[in-house]
Length: 79
Image (cartoon, rainbow, N blue to C red):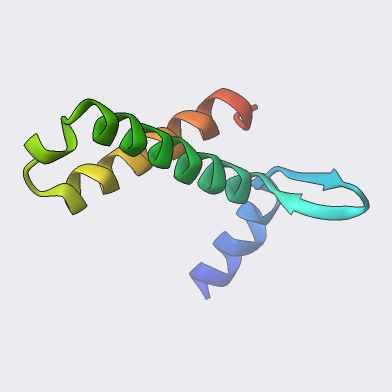
């Protein structure tokens, strides 16, 4: 019951934008932007040869993705 009340209260907190007539949630834009930024960073690391020096690549790129996504969210979608 408490989770239903919380969902009802917090349901209006997600910014939704109208994009060509379709409603587009802000968190999805931040997730896609974070993925693109992480791919760009990986490309730069491979080009410079630093990718080979990374230990725990999966964890490093996951952290990079989270950092980029959350940063985009904070910059563009906070009120």
